[in-house]
Image (cartoon, rainbow, N blue to C red; front, side, top):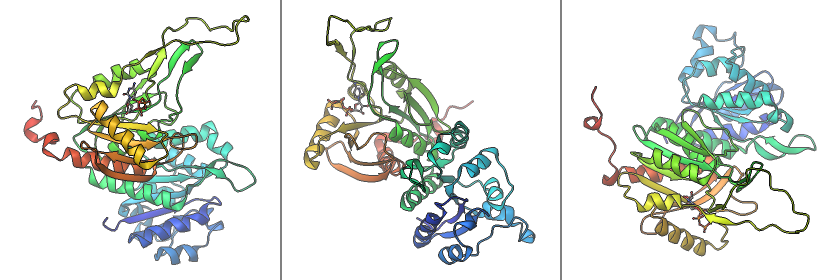
Length: 417
Ligand code: CTP
């Protein structure tokens, strides 16, 4: 990757000491790093440390360097802005577009992709004000990395801990690279994400533990690469990404209808959703009551259609079909064999094999996958944050699309008005 001009913003939280690791990794990767700490950040980490590690002078003052119009020059020159840690206060300021310090001005004056790594106590992260601010930022296309779940500053633990520097760096560089490449421009990509819910009665459903994070990361990454993205969102437990056409669904049958409609004329369909294989044979219109004379309940289930197989076995020339396989098989070779069989059975062009378990795969922010191609070959193995995995999968998609079978639209194909 060509060297980038990267601004690292640091705001005033204890995780500021870990920002040094982010700066160091970016400098060692060959990038030109300019650090803009807030006044609060400098209480946690000293300017000499930041200057030594970044190998550049560090400025914080809005009213210094006025002759060189520093308050906009830093942001205008940036190829990427990373804010780590981003405190609840700084997130609120970003959402409101405030420019009362050098970092706020830098962000507002920049058109570069913005990546932030929130860090705060769990209560602050869960506060509706912070949730709304994060949603606003995400809707503007800001990439949010973490927070991770774990030990916080005090004795407490929970979501709010800043992601590790290497995770932030990988996600930030992947975002910058994707924005620069635009290699899905002019493509229409459909992604299904989340887990379907099959109602039993007005208050209960059969569901699964898919959070939708991996599918949403794929939608977000495809959007950043210039694609027009339709996201079929099945009961998502994560915030929906910006700039996508979102179609909410709940059951497998609703998902089937939505994806079949959206898939017409699409260049790529990614079936990342966890679809229920069975649904209750009947849905009670009233809440099912316990029966005092009985100590068990038997549910009758009927098969749902296999949506991916339906798409895979219908003619789908020009549409690259990417399936997922969620498997609990611990042995690597047997896991691959299951993936190969599943790809073949469903007629997918690519199959992303994902090991899942009680503690693996679902709500976590990291993932490890193997992508299997049409002849059963391993096309790539990717692990890391769900965003890095999304980029790895899209790299394969892009290289498949550039083969003759999936030619990109040409000027002649465009309708004239
Ligand atoms: N899938 C689908 N329709 C279903 C079930 C699954 O389209 N009724 C899709 C999923 O979106 C995924 C792929 O098929 O892309 C594999 O899903 P997975 O749950 O791993 O496999 P199943 O087909 O359900 O097989 P099994 O549960 O027997 O492993």
